[in-house]
Length: 120
Image 1 (cartoon, rainbow, N blue to C red):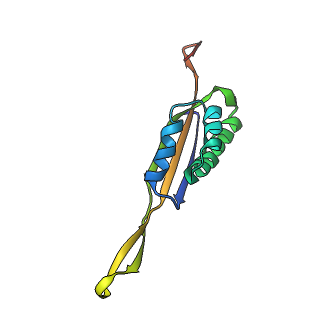
Image 2: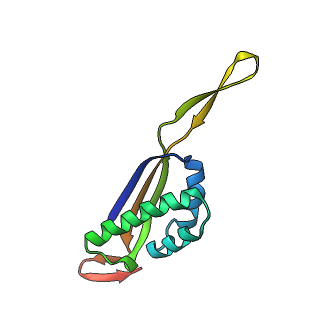
Image 3: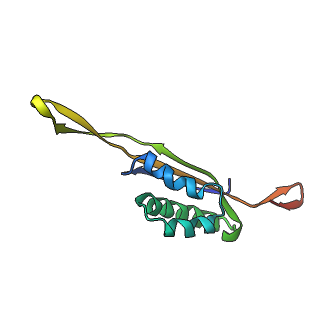
């Protein structure tokens, strides 16, 4: 792990985020950014912001953008906001407004074993 970024308490369900994560998991970081810009989903914008933050964190540590790839990408569930809605016969039903946490970890495509760099 070279760099990571985490975004918490996003007002989107993890199930909807995982649809977008499937498109960019285990790809180069710059390639993933281009894909996320082309996808017309709310989760793509949220994921794009987190990915941009992770790339900036890696650049601050001295790594090059073109060598980075996404090694770990998770969308976990956060707290659920419970709201009520009127139902028939005077009853109430629960509406669950789900939240998500995104975790992105970047790694370099060059691994250092001993003193020899291996591209892979």
